[in-house]
Length: 317
Image (cartoon, rainbow, N blue to C red):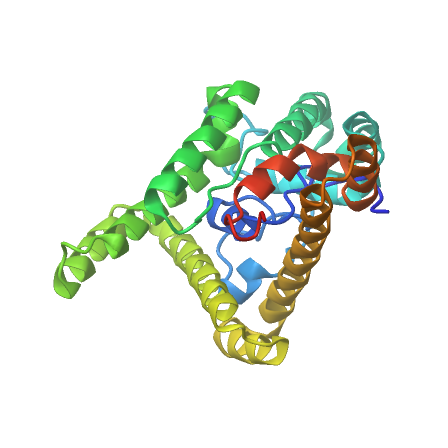
C-alpha cells in the first residue's frame, strides 16, 4: 500500500497526468520534495534539485520587498518558505507539517520576522493543499488550456495571500507565465510565417525586465523538455534513448530527474490501469473501495476520477 504522507515542499502530491505542467507553471513536480529551482540558473539546474538559501531571510539581504522596505516581502520569500518545508520532511497531515514549521522558522528567517513568516508559511501549506486539487490541463502545451489552468491557480493564490504577499511570492513568476503563454500562442499560430513568429517572439522577450530574460529561457527549456517527452512517448522510446538525448540537451542531472518523472508516470498509469480494469469488470463497490485504498494515497484519490476522465475512450474500456 502507498503510505499517505505530506511531504514538505510538495504538499500537493500531483501524481500522474499533467506532471510536467507544474514545471511549466512554476510549481514543484508531483512528488519532488525539493524547493523550486533557484532563479537565474541554467536549464540543467532548473530541472534539477535546488539547494536551500545559505542563510535566513533577512540576514545579509537588503533587497526591498514588494511592500516598500518590508524585509519579509522580498523576491526570496518563496524560496525561503519552500526550503523550510523541504527541511520539515514528511508529516502525517498538513496540521502536523505546520507544527514542524514552528521549530524550523528561526533557521530560515531572521528573529524579527519569525512570527509573521510562520503565519505566512502555514497559509502557504493550505495553498499547496488546495493546489493539489486543481485539475491540470489535458494538454499542457495547448495555450488555451494553459491559460485557463494558470488563471485558476492565480485565483487560488489570491484567496490565500494579499496583494503585497502575492507580489513577493509570485510576482516574478506571473510575468514569466505571461511570457510563456505568449510564446506558446505564437508558436501555435498557423497564420504567422516563420519570420513573423521570430519577430513576435523577440518582441515578447523584449517586454520582460532584463533580470527575468534568463529565467524566461528556463521556461522555454521546460517547454522543450515537455515536447521532447511527448515525442518519446509517441515513439515508444526506451529509457536508454531518453537518457542519452536528455543528457545531451540538459545535462545528466536533469536527465536523471526527468527519468524519475517517467518512472512515476508509468507507476501511476499502471495503478490506474489496474483500478480501471477492476471497475470495468463490474466488481462490487466494497471491493472497488478496498482496491482504491490499496492502490492510491488519500491525496491521489482526490484526483482519481479526474485522471480517469482524461484518458481516451479506448483506455477507459
